[in-house]
View 1 (tube, helix red, strand yellow):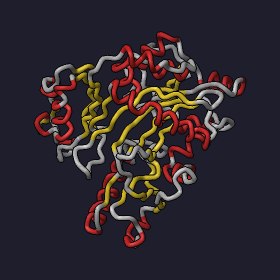
View 2 (cartoon, rainbow, N blue to C red; view 1 turned 180 degrees about the vertical axis):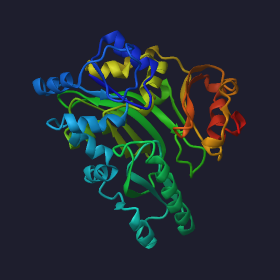
View 3 (tube, rainbow, N blue to C red; view 1 turned 90 degrees about the vertical axis):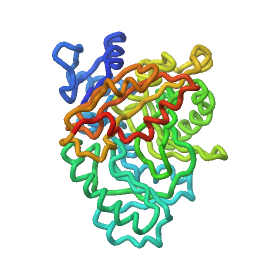
View 4 (tube, helix red, strand yellow; view 1 turned 45 degrees about the vertical axis):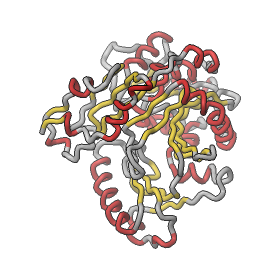
Length: 386
């Protein structure tokens, strides 16, 4: 079963729902009338009452409130809380990473913190957050003064866009810097708690202080290199949280010695806005939604054998122009597409409402990867009129 909610449902997810006749409930009025054959809330509730192994996927964390209110008799709300709240997540894996520093603070306590008690540099992020809102790297005391004001400004705006379950500024997590290259991967746990990884993407950054979500890419080489270690970590995590019949989107860093340290785990979904699951399908033809809901464990040996050697990228066009969205008259999507050899899908977003212009999926030959590096460092001013 699937819950659909704002802000975005991809064409691929809709096609998957129709092809496999998955029961779906629209909890956010995101679909058009007659577009999908919808079920009622009671049907999902009754399914879980009749069968504790029922599976539920949501495209958006906006649906979390619905799950908490209607499925409180299941384990789903507990699973959601331990991952959605980043402080609770750190507590969950403390035995796995006993030397990792983290500390919870409130917005008010930020002004009273003794920086000598914190590792410098450090990362600060909201205990409950989304789309890198409120996530900052603090390098020194001067930087800290600037970051505190940025956080206050960001959350004043975010409260008008996202529900409290998605972005909650009452609590923040301060943690030590996690070194290494960053990756995101989707996985699920079956009725026995056994895990399957459904796709792996590398998260690129433009510089050491960059915390944006501009570029993720996947490839045969990326998946082949990290599949075993990521599967082992996900299984250990699932064992710790006793997860069953549950999908997750996991973000980790891997240092030069191969040590894996998790950043966060997003519950009940794969990459937000139908991103990483769709990217996996573009690259490999593996359908993560179908795999989870039908309990299909991918034959990665066969999948990798059939994949090509191209780079498949997800480009998130966040507003890095420095120009307030209300002052921007137009974003030139055609000019953007001209910068890429093989664009696969462009998703335009209402940038007056959300802090992004859209998302672009691309296919790039290895020897033309410079096109990805250029968009990674672009402030996107060349594409806007204001």
